[in-house]
Image 1 (spheres, rainbow, N blue to C red):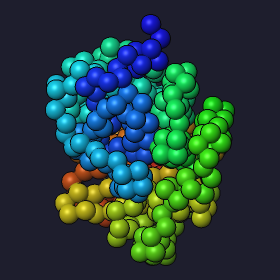
Image 2 (image 1 turned 180 degrees about the vertical axis):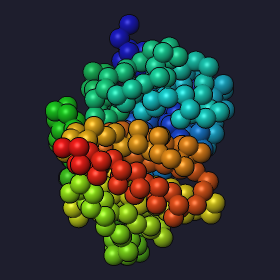
Image 3 (image 1 turned 30 degrees about the vertical axis):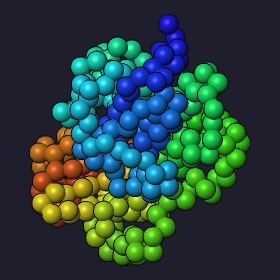
Image 4 (image 1 turned 60 degrees about the vertical axis):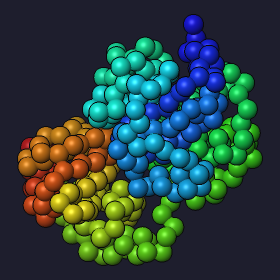
Amino acid sequence: MMFSETISMMKGGQNLVLCHDQADSDAVGAAFALARFIGADIGVPQAVATHTHKLLEELEINILIGPDVSRYEHVVVVDTAAPIQLKSSLPERFWLIDHHPVNTLFAQALGGLYDPVSSTCQLVYRLLKELNAPFDRQIGLALAAGIMTDTINFHKGDPEAFRAFGEILEVCQLTYEEVQRLYVVDERKDRGSICQAALNARKYTFGGYHVLVTEIDSNIPTFAARALFDLGADVSVVGFTKGEEVEIRMYLRQELAEVHHLDAAELFRTMPGMDAGTAWGYSLFAGYRARGELPGLLRAIVERFSQLLQEESIGK
Ligand SMILES: [Mn+2]
């Protein structure tokens, strides 16, 4: 049976669409659109990512924290690449819709749709289209926000991501700006924090590449890292201290990653002093969360790039 038919059969049942922990707009957007079609609760193991709060508010999405997954007839997990991202909410039986280039969860699923495209939202759009599902502005906003997030506002993306985004705008009568409003930081206080973080940044040049490192006083390190990257950094690293925990985000420029065979997520996983936390991401973006002390971690990251980039340039 096609997976779209399976989805169709779930309609009216006791359903849960479960996102990965720290759910981003791709996970939440996909969950919302699917939940509207089959009728489902939406859950997350512990928390939703800060940048997604705007989408939750806009769509008035009610998310269950740590839902009892055994209570449901059908559980569809979305946008999740590995069992660890579900923490203790990993269901015994579940379907999966995901797009991550490496997926270690699909083998445990009853089935689903796994295709390593740009976003989970485009996969949900594909399924809903196949089912002739009704679309409205809310579903459109959810799916478009997810595609925009996972393509990093179209800094990357496969043809289907662009096509799906355009179709969604058209079918749901949305404008690009309406979707972007959910994506960019438009709180004046947050923009101030990003400006201050940029002004406080230290710039290192190793092997000709610019490495910008800073701390931010607001929990939006991803946006600040993106801002430094857009300013011209080849590597941008931004840390935020939240009580005893630290959050670090890093963007790598593609050219640097290719020339030096670097993978951002892999770098964080193997960084000296960073083995105590959780690292995630892909080749050009990585996140890290742990209990720890931020200045020491940032120094270790700078030291690592100093070795990686200067050694190689000497060898040439
Ligand atoms: Mn995703």
